[in-house]
Amino acid sequence: MRTLRYGIVGGGFITMFHLRALRQVRGVEVAGLVSRRPPEAAARYVREHGLGEGKVYRSVKEMAPHVDVVAIFAPNFTRIATIEELVDAVKAGAPLKGVICEKPLGRNLPEARRLVELIRQVNLPNAYFENQIYMKSVNAAREQLRQVSEAMGPPLLARSGEEHAGPHNAWFWDPTQQGGGVMSDMGCHCLGVGWYALTPPDKPVRFLQPQSVSADLALLKWGQPRWRQELLDRFGVDYARTPAEDFATGMVTYLNPETGQRAKSQFSVSWMFDKQGMRLALETLGAGYGFETSTLRSSLEVFIGDVAAAGVANAEAALEKSQSSRGLLAVQPNEADLYGYTDENEDAAASFRAGRSAMLDWDYGVEIVRLTMAAYLASERRATVDLTDPATNEFLETYVPLIQQGRGGEVL
Ligand SMILES: NC(=O)c1ccc[n+]([C@@H]2O[C@H](COP(=O)([O-])OP(=O)(O)OC[C@H]3O[C@@H](n4cnc5c(N)ncnc54)[C@H](O)[C@@H]3O)[C@@H](O)[C@H]2O)c1
Image 1 (cartoon, rainbow, N blue to C red):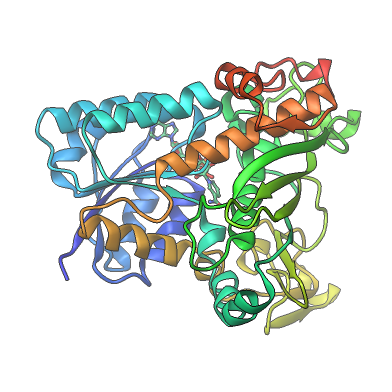
Image 2 (spheres, protein in one colour; image 1 turned 60 degrees about the vertical axis):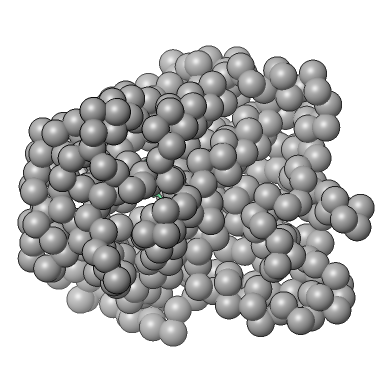
């Protein structure tokens, strides 16, 4: 197997998670890293774990000729500038084999489509990273139920949720930089995995056709004076001026084009899950069968009493976004694998080696942005958005949600 040399853009939270995942992926090494500030911690981790040279470069342009794959793990608002620089490097001769982009592909449709247009100019195989679709639990359930769903018909209803107590960095809370609140940040996970869970196992990921989207977005916790003040103190973000939603729920209706059967995907996301840590849950039901998975269930639980808790500093050692370091704690010993990061990197690497895009390409990423925009529009209009209506689709192409424009006060 030919080793693929990754060059990673961004040296923050998700980069560290992917590095943990890459320790479990064969045939990939991390040759380069570039970030806004020199990503020394990530580079040290790379070298300490034998993941590769981990050389820190000053720019994407400088790094591109020395790697096979550029993995974009930088903040949402930096996408276009990064891809423009990358495409220029390829045009100047950098022999890249693929490019990866973390979710979301763009903050709105004009941005997402611009990224696809840029990458087409150089015909570069690509991967859109939506980890939940690669979760081993989700794929094991689909495999286990393959024959049942062939006999009884594909799933009809999916309910998915991703929640935690709020993001770790200021730019996530700024709707103009991030793209919105929790719908933009985490709704994409549920939209992706719900669609996938309903899709017959032998069909491509975009087989089911989205028909309509309804949604209700709200600011429940972080708009209250006490919590607004905390955001101001911790992150310098003022939710009195530019609020974003900390809760979103809704439903996408899909059509099976072969049978005419409809299926529904309910989603629910929040930044106000003041419980154990990150909850990532999926329930899927067909006629006579179903499956359910939750990342808050683990075969490992530890207990830390009040007396011992004083000595425990690192709550996040147990679970991403963990809220507590005492009591009965669910511990996930391999979160990078649990959430699907291992498998999405494996698929990207195998696909690029074969000269093609991954199962989830950037066109798929655009579709997820389209569904996300439909959810914002549905909430703004307080009406279901009909995705079979040409005028609505045309409107979505240039639509930027009020919350993303920094005008969330008008709708929340
Ligand atoms: N799949 C998931 O579950 C998941 C989880 C977290 C984040 N993400 C995505 O990953 C991306 C990064 O999120 P994060 O949590 O790592 O954020 P972060 O704030 O923890 O880290 C961002 C990093 O990018 C660097 N950076 C900032 N501007 C840059 C630029 N112009 N060029 C290069 N680097 C730059 C920062 O210095 C920092 O090192 C986001 O798009 C986010 O949506 C995905």
